[in-house]
Length: 173
Image 1: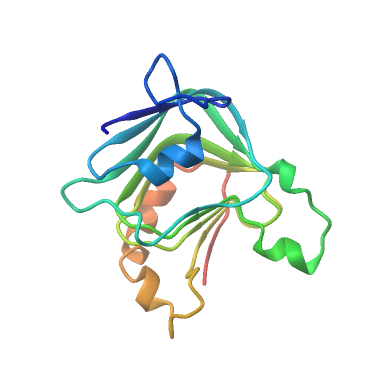
Image 2: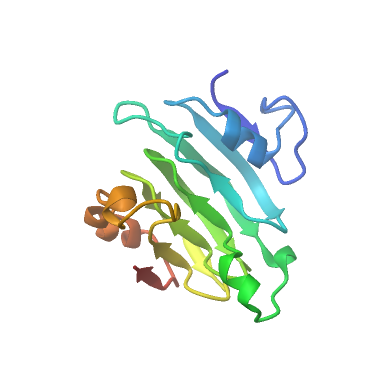
């Protein structure tokens, strides 16, 4: 399967005429291909985790591109101010070699995104109205002994990450 087309209410096969579900597309995307997100508001009530083993390569990144105004709205998670909210992030990007362009992430009960893989690029992304830091660069896998095991290469790319991010706070741990 090559490029995949998705929409906010997609349940189809992933063609332009019959778009798929975004989360299923993230899980199915092959290296070197692109998820094309149709304009719209994609509503979620739980975190989307892009796992470590769901990675592209240096020569074949995995791409997510907004075709119009795309909002990933995590306000369905709810926010109570409780201790449990501290792990309710919108997206946990643990995979490596992902390129995400033009997406707005909003409404998460904690960070809009925790970025913990290697060699990921966020371009023209917006992190707004999340209940904690919009974008956090930190380890996600608590089994690692130190932060360098998970995000050592990402630290050098903070300027690239921030260059397209508007209205975001960055927290690096």
